[in-house]
Image (cartoon, rainbow, N blue to C red; front, side):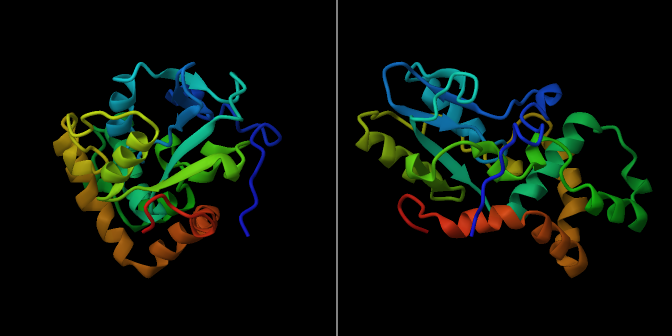
Length: 220
């Protein structure tokens, strides 16, 4: 059974502030009881521009005490998200690293430090303090855009949601495409190694428990 962890209790609430993401980051407006909770690497680059078209702005549900709003939360396969996140991490912070020096010792070390930043953080931390009864869950895959669009239309937010490129995969990013692709070619094969794959899955066990405990909009 999924059991939430109180970030404030464990001193984690501001863990990634220095990387530019604060737990509780969300988007909403005063005119709606809905809010979107941002989990990095879960289609946020596509979702946020669509909501800005409706005049939604950045808030923090912890700081602004928005716990009673109906939250839209997108979850993603933890292994897929980690791969995308680790490529993002190295592109942002170590793009000039000499990849020819990567060896088994480096990969073993990486597996001991799987959470490197907000892009590789466990997903359940990003919804800390929210009641699951007040969350509409979406699954981050090829159906997400249609589900998102349908849900918002049902709430009265009809819009042209295909005006922005779908950016939830590394290959669809315009900036740093080549470098992200380089890193993906390096890290993707790690997932074929059962030793590494099992470590990743064990590390994100709470995310799997969360995913298996909720019902996704539109089903999957």
